[in-house]
Image (tube, rainbow, N blue to C red):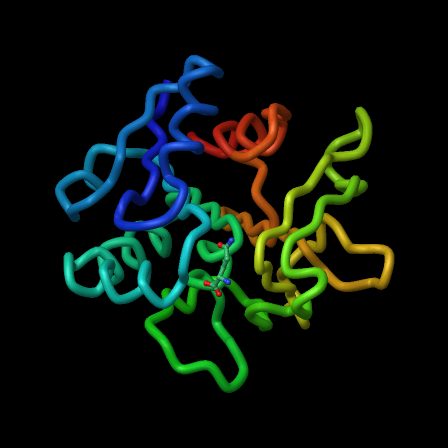
Amino acid sequence: MGSTGVLAVQGDFTEHVHVLRRLGQPCREVRLPEDLGKVDALIIPGGESTTIGKLSDRFGLTEAIRERTLAGMPLWGTCAGMIFMAKDLGAHRQSMLQLMDITVERNAFGAQLDSFETDLPISVFDDGLFHAVFIRAPVIESVGASVDVLSKLKDGRIVAAEQDNLLATAFHPELTDDPRFHEYFVDKIG
Ligand code: GLN
């Protein structure tokens, strides 16, 4: 069974580790490039994308994650993690992996909807809606031709997508009891 890493420089990495442990999946917190060498997939958690980017740069992780992902390692970003993976953030200038062909708008929901929960249809799950928790969440404004949209809000804005070995969710599956996204992601290993 492959080991799943969780980037552990900032954000809610512990919650991802808990879900993986509950599923009986081998996992490891990734803080340094050496840790990355020991995992077969990587999750980038929610948190603050500018901080995750800065710390990843400082520890030599940004380049290491880019190289591994370009060589085929499955990579999943939730919320801030999705922002860090994107190729385009519009006017925002911050450290980015620039791996996924999506344009992302940070903090896309106004003050009143800063945080909310909703039930979403997910195209790759045929066994019911997914309860999604959004916290100062981004949305995907547009996707490139090789990206599959997995879920949209009622207003049509894209909140989950996949591109080969890359998975992105604007919400936080690690904060609910539904393990389907984690199962779906670890299935991408090998
Ligand atoms: N608003 C955060 C950012 O722009 C993301 C919030 C989150 O990960 N819950 O980085």
